[in-house]
Length: 314
Image 1 (tube, rainbow, N blue to C red):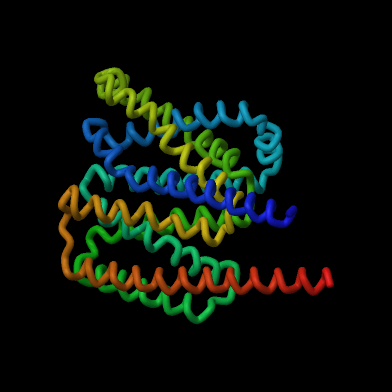
Image 2 (cartoon, rainbow, N blue to C red):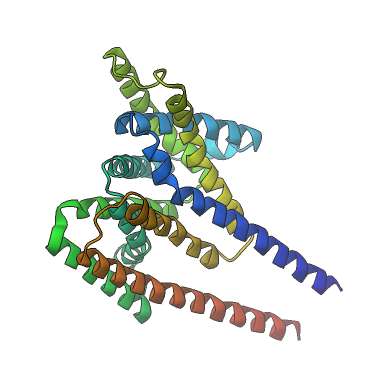
């Protein structure tokens, strides 16, 4: 009876984790629509407001969850501070390029960048951490490389958007792996490091009479809510990862760029050429192979762990 109760609770937690992960990436997925609502606001000001309101919201959450000791512990280590400073630069670049690209009608390129990100992470693992690359994952990376190369040769003018998004995000992930900190505290520190620049920028544009905040109540509300759409998905995914296998939770990351891709083509009618079709086909095929290999490995390890536990009990 106890085992049945534990299994039922595990299934319930998995279902809750599924809902949390789905909600997190649905928010990421509809981000282009949200940013389009702010088209009257310059990208730099959107970025600055996103940083400031994120800091305020995250500080409130850290206070409510009593995680300030973790923040102070991270700040007491120079190596951690340097790592988070580098992450702040990378994530700041990522956010700025993303906001500009969406407002400049390059959503297709942003979705491509986030599709490439998991494979870029694999490449960094091999190059920097000297990890062994299984053959299926090597094939996946090879297919993605072929697709990106084809797009670069045909129309490389906007390919930089996808590459910058993929490189900055995956590199920040690598740094976080090497210097791990609680995700919530980490995002608070990183946004706090960006905050002085954000405040200085808003002060300057306001002094020039170009500040957007205060001109329209709807835009003001949307700018304040950028902190929510930044922090909430992180909290939802963190909660999901605690309730389900991380390899499974990670597969939800493809929901965001898929929704962005559909919005780019069906809603905002961005050009989708045969070269785009070939590039995305290569990347989707590569991601399919990559995902299958990750899940197969996780299943194999789970079976091996269970068998070892049974053998030990016997």
